[in-house]
Length: 267
Image (cartoon, rainbow, N blue to C red; front, side):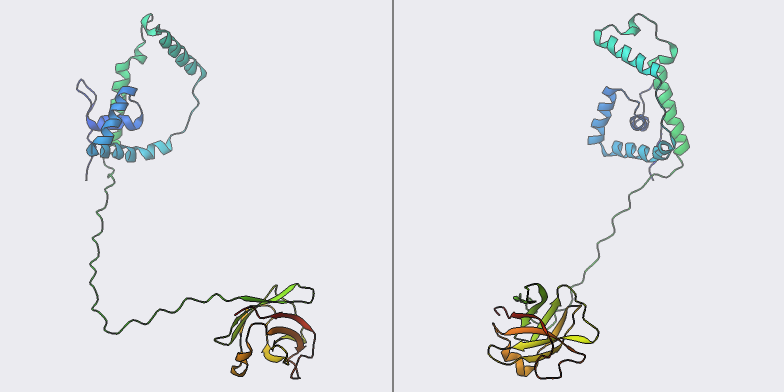
């Protein structure tokens, strides 16, 4: 486990730990800060010190509250900046008070860093966990049984619109003639009287209707076409839906009103 070993202020140059702490606190002048940033980019060990200070000081920073800067402080800063731009800094004509001496702030900063280090020195630094070892993969023995052939992709099939007499859509039908299945979807879901049920009819060109059974008016579902009728699932044949008594039409053909119909799209 690495630790921060700050050095108390004195005549000697600050240690890397103190310098890293001052960088994190933001108390370095522009030149030194630029030098420290350059070291961060090229020295991993020094970068680790800066990261350690940032981690240690983060809880303290969260506890600090912002405070407004007094107006007279901003006024003094602006005056000194203006004087510096004119080359007539106020310090050249007026003795610098002891509380504004550079050496005092540098010493105070170093002492603060040292004190913070004493407070946080017992706090363990975050240590990166070593990466988990890669799992050992044992190749399975080859299976002599040939793999099954992949299932064919679903076939996109044309959609047949079953519309009302006014052209409004009532059901959508997708016909799979190869497997004898008609997929029906009401659009929108329809309210059917409790004493009536919708019944689907297949009407080959020029022939009588053949019932495919009672269907749903409020959900998508599949209708299985009897084997004897699958040869009539051809392009141009008509699908129709009528309203019949409960249990379906009592006759071979529709007895109630036909509420939707449409010709089977090209298969």
